Image: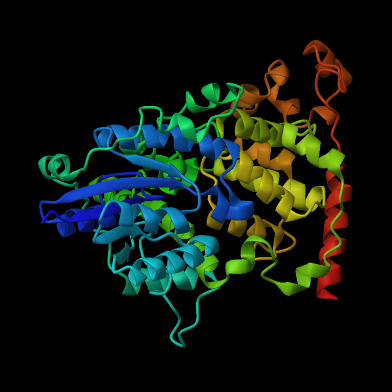
Length: 479
């Protein structure tokens, strides 16, 4: 009798280092493996993928389907109904998937396992998304960590190091995959791409898919790792990995990224590799917090922030979203976000601090905008990062840490290379006045052909005044 197994792809759109794929091939025992992806917007509720993320998913599914010889089944609807029905329809004996950790996915997957068990179909899930499972790294009393450093140290001391990557045998894979009867337009039918073609320019700067992820990893190890620890703070440098969307969609496993960096570090950049792995563990910590504190996407982890005196000013938020605040580093970051689906990490902290502390807008406004605009929109990292900046989350930034966008710009983009790339109307300004045009002498602006309020906006708020206002607001929480 031919054994049929179902392999359910989720946020693991790759063949290498894929535990669910390995298990499905083993379970089939020379039978058939049916790979399937389900676009389940219904179960996601408020956390359906944003526009930029959907564009990336379209290309990533195309790449995965090609690597599977066109045999990927693509379905749309409630996975809780579709997966059990699909498994029964194809006479499957088992269904295999890699775990996800968003609260809505955990609840849904438990129900799917129960349904499959009721019709005698085995359901198996695996840890293929993170370095370690969230329940593996706990304090001695069995409670979760809320501070990163002890979490990190305990993980390094108690959890296994990343193993060498592996890939399935191509001949076995080709022999095992069952044919797919869906039309060639199966991915297009999901309508993941927008009606307007704004995404073409955005995706032109990326190569979604497993091959693109491995190429980006190699490029980073070759030219970015050697200056990673210091260079990653400078947005004009090529010292960041730009692996976040590949990791989010599972085109690259964190195990392979950590292993490759460690191996590269042994060839002369050990401290740099350690710092990169530490950043991978920061990503891990976000998932860990979301697993143990599932309300952090919508609620302050620190309850005292429920009485924080937020302002509600749609005009200020619109200026921030459009990159028209009058502060060039802020505007460059927000325009980078909209045009590329990405923002440099240092700049993410600056723009988040500005929205929350200088504009006094609730952190959820930023969380939602990033969710829609980022190709690497990740529920755990996005929520934890915004709460970190606000001071309302675990291991949060201190309340008095308010990034000054002018001094940050002067320090980390001294010649204005990053700013001029995304705010080209300021290209004629000398570096000494580029970072704060609203304070520039009239002659400097005239020589550059800039009229404030016409060619470029005046600063929408005063940094000193809004800093003092924010500190006073935070003080009310301590009082």
